[in-house]
Image (cartoon, rainbow, N blue to C red; front, side, top):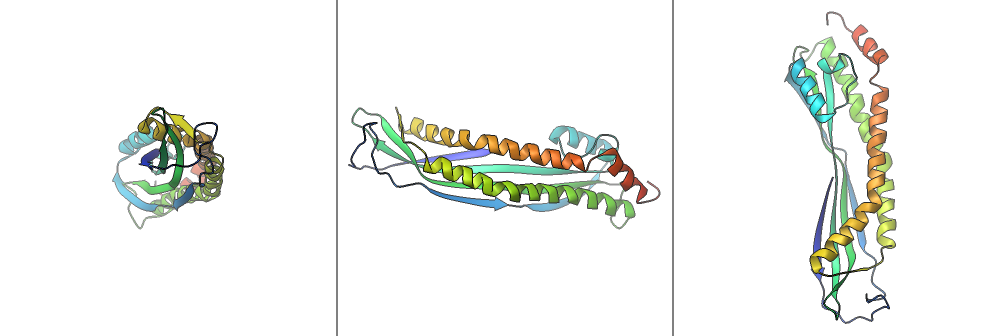
Length: 218
């Protein structure tokens, strides 16, 4: 997950509230894009390499032997670019508040790995790919479920944001960014936990046995 921030200093002479920050500030603008990603098929790895990829990435694949056949790697990203209004105060500090928040959430890249001995056109390749594409569909369904919730959470955080005072422009920008991040982190973690749980439901011994029964000569 990445969060970017940029600061904008505006020389202004507004009326100041008791807190030291300007009163009547305009609400921040919010945008969010959702990326369902593209899918690449990698059919050139041996079973030992697939096992290493699974260990390194925590990719969707059940225990047992399925990771010798295929697995799915989903790259999750959440980015947020925050433009911050920074008002200089008479004592040298700054009042900081978000001016705009541009966010993006999604899985920009999926990679389905299918063991190289299961060549394109074979029954084994077909059933392995079908199983892995189900993982992709589950990730995308989870994304479509949570993206509106993330947007709503950000809308509330931005609307209820109380301007803060910081000793410098950089510190003000960082504090605004971190305050927003704290508001959305729990929902992002919930989203990822839910995706893991749904994927685990189709990576069972029974599903593995069903896949093995679908083709001969494994």
